Image (cartoon, rainbow, N blue to C red; front, side, top):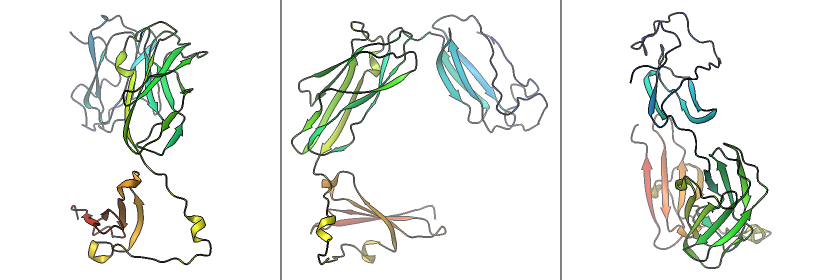
Length: 280
């Protein structure tokens, strides 16, 4: 298949990417250029070639089919970058489950599950079902009604039945969407499900009240022999039961950075690993 259309600064030419010849006829800063439309074969693949005189990128490309944006590309260099797309209109029913608020560490108790969904289909979505299951257990469903999601619009929905964590350990929650506008299946089921594996453990204790007028005993657990040298910051692993402590040392630009990871912090079996920037 030959060239359907070409444009821009023809003085650059197909082989002019990065030549820095500075020919006249370029686009102005911030200019939006709309070209087309063209009649193409549905389902066929096409390519956009991006050639930039200075090879410093900066162009962004939106591809629309029948008014629907199906692709978005960002040019990084313009050294004859090639962006391919399929000339197909979006499906009629395609609701995408983008994310949930489940994180990798949860504490026991109830938790209100919410999800962000995006309409990637051409049909307005007014209703659907949001479901979840923990460790392949019973399915908990929530009927969403009264929505008005047009193409590319998103919304965040809270499930009516909270999650409930009663024991410590690793668990997996599957969240999915179905029954678009009541009875319609999603034509692209690949983006309907999200699996999140997390650990349930104790919450961070609030120790502030214990220090009110009480005598504090400081017990060093790591020092120079472990690689700790003028520490500037520290943090614990988000999974608190790991008892993993991270320390950042104060180094110089010439020497590079270094860190110390302390495992089983404060316990008799404590160990540590010193890491440094090998590029210096």
